[in-house]
Length: 395
Image (tube, rainbow, N blue to C red):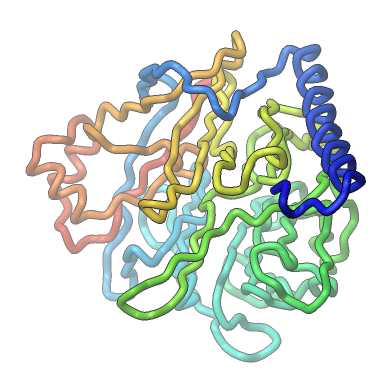
């Protein structure tokens, strides 16, 4: 590093920048301590504690209907869940499946095509119970396509120039929260145009940006990693794999890997810090950066994962952390599902999980299942559609 510094002025500039990062983080930490919120040490190993899933949440299992027109494989993702509606989407094929509370298929539609009322593929899908509308976006697309729950085209929301929505989340009856990834994960033009405010409230009627959420981000980080596939001779992009927006009963959790603070954005348009991390992410060498993101929030716990890139294994290594909201204590969480011995359901706490029938049958034969899940696994065949696990936190 010293070899690259040609004069003392550059050394002074770098020292000032590094010092400002430390002062900024210390200021955030002091604010958080004054509000009795938690500070997470990114480099610390925390004690391990067992948490039984059934002790903190109501867990249900629903076998999804199987039929010739209802084939749900591993390419399908669970995109929406409520007490009486479940939505699954095959992002590449464009199939959208809507199931009722018993797992019976209510409707299936596909709007894949080239007209202005269709999509080439589905990169992201969001359903709004407020309006009973489905919103879809394509990667690098110019519009958000809006459909009724019956699959009827309603309108297109134009995405403004030099913006790229990669995540949408429902905020209220007139607004969506969008996450802007323009020129971050992928270079989309020759400029250095990158928004310092990745979270934006946009209109459900015309897609215009109504409000930018100021999180005081100094520099946007791209934590995706490129690895070479030796068999195909291609480069594969591996992303972090966790949503930057988490929906809760009280509002949205918004988080960006470029910041040291995760926030709650309330239904009253208030930005409230949840916790802060130290040392500052921008002060850490890129190869040693530790990133964290919230996956779910209950009255009792904040559930988050931390990831750091393992160069030797060419993948992210992960830890599951919990913040006890009663005493602000942090611990590494060993989440136990009493119905499925050894199953890791941590990342699915916020949404739920599609459990492959073949996996359940194998676990059944191995004696790993019990309770309600065992009874369902005994009735299904390995070629059936997945079993949906739903999670509802206890108050």
